[in-house]
Length: 225
Image (cartoon, rainbow, N blue to C red; front, top):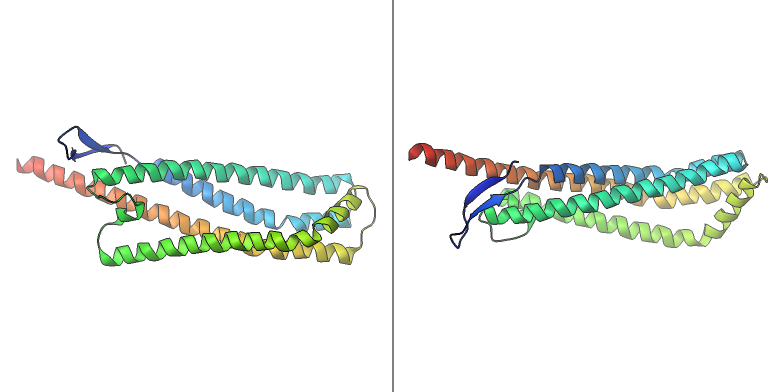
């Protein structure tokens, strides 16, 4: 949405400007989706560790370690990108509400006053934050539960790196447990990312709709005069 004027400010000063948010919205949605998918892929890395145990040596074990480091760095980059994009998007979206004549500074109020639309937005908001909370709690519980076997996993990786044989049943138990513990939170984060994309999309679309109506009124006024 190109910058558009929305009449005079309440004090009679310069016209308020509604700023575009589509680029920030797109960046936020791309980053949150990429972060969630990277996190989901990282949850399956214990499978790579298990393969390294079955083929012990520095090459396979080093590959597993490198993949964990790369996944962590990529995830951090996408999370950071999402935080920046979300901040830019929400700041502009809240600023535009003044130009629309909305006193509230909550971006959810961009959807207007229609009861059904507001109800759907309220449900979406509660679903989003509930899913985020569930994902965080699940991840913390998984981390807490995984602490009991962290030492054993480290020993198994060290043995595999040294090329020493490792008990296959023990390795399958340890890495299988790590996978089972990490997967639920990763799936919840994917769901949270999907809900975030819907949330951003609805607010952005609602603001575009408001701009279109403002321009239509301006054109009608121009032709009427």
